[in-house]
Image 1: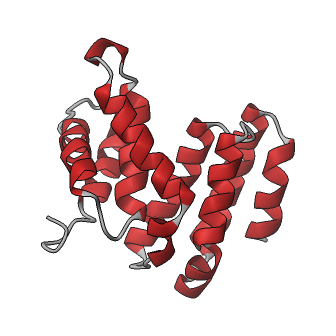
Image 2: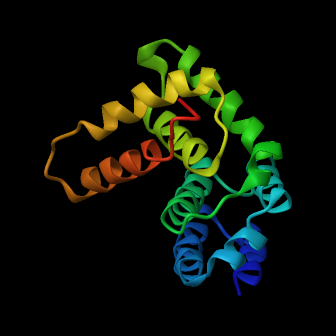
Image 3: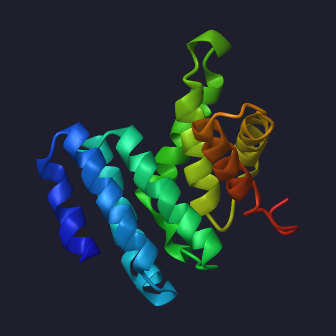
Length: 170
């Protein structure tokens, strides 16, 4: 069911695609560990990267999907060993570095946060350079104290991403 819904995403506008991704997220939540591991392999991550590159999926929609996939990965203790080899991983590393290099007033903080959350939660091994960018970024999000429900979800996702580190990574 996931693959069928995912393959249809390219034909929708960004707004409709977002609604379809929310439906896909419900399907992802029902998948068991083996199904998650078999679906989210290097080929799938490369497909997502290709869709982003060809402007068939916005980065915002991709991060919505991938943050949820990363969340399920962490909560279900699943490992996507092949993510490190994917073109999507390379794209994330490049985009994180590019965003970090921008002057602070020109930096897209939401994009940087989304990229860091996806990168950290999907990866098993993390680049030290990327860690030095992502950890301060995610800690900044995690320290927000606003009572807004949307802000609280952002804080929870940042904390979940930060929980992916173990003593081996740090």
